[in-house]
Image 1 (cartoon, helix red, strand yellow):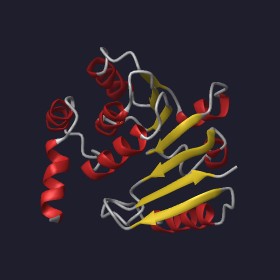
Image 2: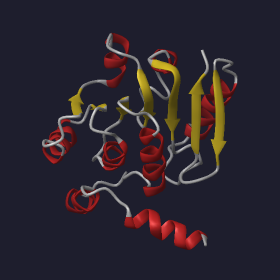
Image 3: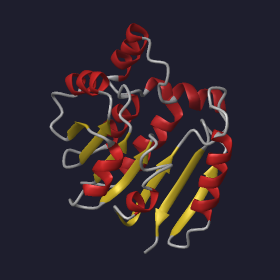
Image 4: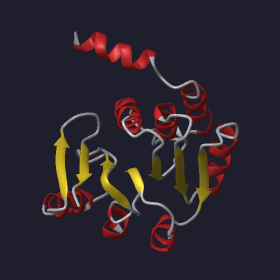
Length: 197
């Protein structure tokens, strides 16, 4: 049953997914998002009609493709990365989707200076918004908004000392009383939080 469920998810990949995977191979991009965090993001985004969404860490656009696939026609999605080559590539891939805005900026500076509408969901897949500027990022969520991070299970490519940083982050998030928090030993290790007030 579980293997059938996984195959079902894979069959429902976004239209751009295969193109992006091919680009990963072409340019040697070694940090693609796990397909299962993608399916989760699509499901969560779909729960927020006309939603306002933020991705911190565009990468090569795999997670972005899932988020865009979950949005309705009235949703808006901002994705930020500081790598100009990647943001240029992803901007071309999503050039026909007016709901999606790709920004090449320092994420920490963007978080600190942002003054627009609060977000229904934030996927923090970069250092800013996860290991730095955490309070500022969580403040950008609406009440009922969802904060998602992955890669919380120890990874073989983690540098020395990163496991301790991850443990510290988990403790910090669990201590917050303004969020309802679930840790999932699934995909690459997911933390899912909903803002209560």
